[in-house]
Image (tube, rainbow, N blue to C red):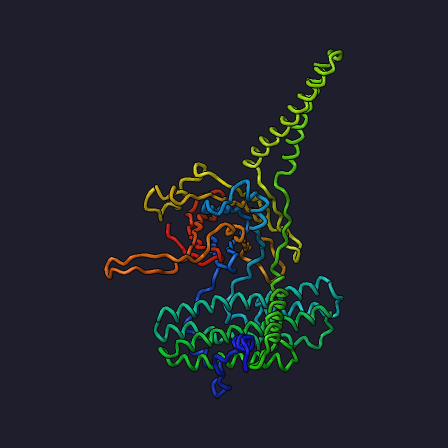
Amino acid sequence: MKTDDDARAAKRRPQARLRAVEEGPHPIAEWASLFGDLSRRPPTSPRASAPVEWRIHDKTHLEFAIDYPVQERGEAYVWEAYFFVPESFRLQEDTYDKKAIYDDLWSYVRWAPPEVELSTLSSREAGSTLAEVSRTLSDARGVAEGSPEARAALRTLRLFACEVRAAGVPAMRDIDAALEGGGAEAEVFAVIGPFTAGISEVGRALRATLAEHEGDALPSDVTTAMSWVDEDVSLVLETLAATVGVTVEGFAEHLPALHEVGERLAATAVAEARHRKERGLDSVGHAGASLREVEHLEFRRHVLKRFTSSVLWLKLEVQNGAAWVLHTFYAIAAAVAMAFALAASVHVTPMTEDVLRYGLLVVVAYVVKDRMKALLQSVFAGWISRRFPDRSWTIEDKERGRLVGRVRERAGFLSFRALPPEVLAARRVTRAHDLEESARPERVLWHQKRVRLAPRAPSTEHANFPMMTEIFRLDVHRWLDHTDDPNRTIVFADPDDARVYSATARRVYNVNVVYRLTRGDGGGPWGRLRVVVSRKGIERIDSILT
């Protein structure tokens, strides 16, 4: 008899979604080329206005990514965000200080890989990424492990894997948009064609390039990286092909020709899995995979992804933005207080014959001195917090040994009177009446970053990164500590059928965000969104036009 655990395990085992068609007289590359030339898109380039992408990372983490284009002469950017949080969250200066803010709002930065089309990554012509891979591998012949030539080869290998992933995901999104948009068959195939052509050729081109250097006397770290990059790219291609294959199969009822497309994409996925199996790798799934085997497969994917994507990571050095100013003013406060205490002591010295009177004045002088010091420190701290950053960042590219930029960061609570008029206007777009501000009181949490990027350095490597990407992750679990139960039972009467009903109502809260990213100190349009949360976590994100 099957237990509940057996039933749950069965649900989590691999489920068959699509069968691959075996290679026939028309290889997938040739079939896809019939449509590839119909949809060549112009080469992409960094956009003039860096976008901000918001998404839900998990139930308690809101994630948003910011792209900072890298310019020839350097550039400065200003990021601002105003979070309008319900007062029922009980977030205020006393309960949610700056340390807590920065503990919950953290970020990491990386280069954005060069924007390339998936169909061009299989090129081995001069100037292509694969040509650069071949060149750096040739330069690494006979060198020691960890040498500059070996490090250059490691970088180009990992960068190629990053470009495959970066090119594949947007292509998948384009296919989803074409299918969901209900376009004509020619329009749909015009989008799918370059994808299928590129995905079938990229793996073969990479393996052909690596095979040319298999007999070379390469350092052990380079040979290991070659194997790992081959495995990572194979996993990425398998995932892309299988995912799109399942997607297009779901639309085959309306466009029957998509059924063959799905089968051939499945064949590409199977070919990648067979390639890894022939090499004796354990990153291969199978129909009877146990939960632990599936877990290991995902773990291996994650390890390889982190290895290849590390070529894009940038190192952050974070310091207190006004530490020296704060300590200077605190020293002044201590000096003023001590001067008062000394003056009071000198004043009462002649009265030594009255011990009680002398002692009382000394105690009073000490108390006044202590409170004067604390008061001055509080005044100076408030003055400094309004004029100096909380934290100063230095961003470095350790892989290539250069400074990328500097950042000044500030955060805190603001009153409605201190908000820019444009921010208030954007917040009030969805409000029907001014009384709503009293009915739904809010606190405003402000976050600002001033980013100054160094000029784009002439690079001797193939990679000339177009953007720096910063990914923020906001942990809202502390925000939800004082929220109500997510489900409530309500009763109401229907005036039409004269009956009383009961229903379960969801208790949700709205966190409104007004934000913008501007180049330099110039103005720009404000964006607006609504994050809907409950005690269980983040429910959804609603975009709002301002």
